[in-house]
Image (cartoon, rainbow, N blue to C red; front, side):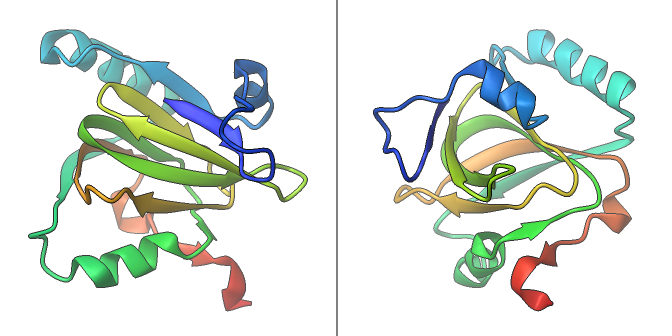
Length: 150
């Protein structure tokens, strides 16, 4: 995982205290299912997540361009956005309390929790490939609320 504020550039790394102040949870986990499964189960128990699924985005994903358009729009959710990356890579841009963008590049082994009601967007890298576990408190209610929608 690499993180920096877009207005400062990638050479200015974000420290763990900044994540903590923004209520963002990050954890590096091994890719061995026997090991990461225990960490995922603990997170589900302690944070109230009740469901999980596996999502994979590749250049062959039907309507990938339309999906990317949805993800790149700045939005919030009433629940946390939780991703554990198994393969590939992606980019989360997350707003801080001063409305600055913090860029977080995630790769295999990265677990990221963007807290409920925190403005963010997601972008695929040029590789256009990511496979990750998603956790939900209520998958039926996991709806994006776009900032520019009024």
